[in-house]
Amino acid sequence: MKYSTYSLILIIVGLFIAYMIFPPFNITFGTWSMAAIPIGLAIYFTGVIFGIIAFIKKEKGFLKYVSLISIPLSVAFGIFLAFLFGGEI
Figure: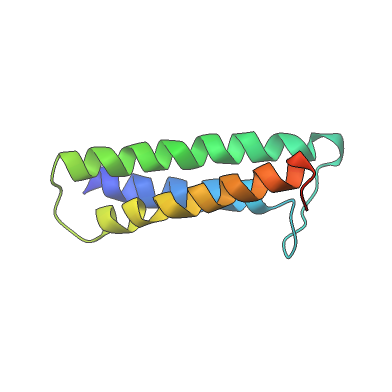
């Protein structure tokens, strides 16, 4: 169960870091605020990879499914960023 636990922790931390410059969090670090998005996404995708490993190794428990459910959330966040930085919004 270690991969699924690490997966869930990394997904939560990665999403928080990636979303923190947007409202309602709106936590900024000055000029380095935009660097939080790729750092958070890297942590998030590491968590997704751990979830896939947990699924492949057939770990017991429900956490592996929770981490795999978060994959559509990453697609939605990618579409959001594409519209935000693409000038469509």
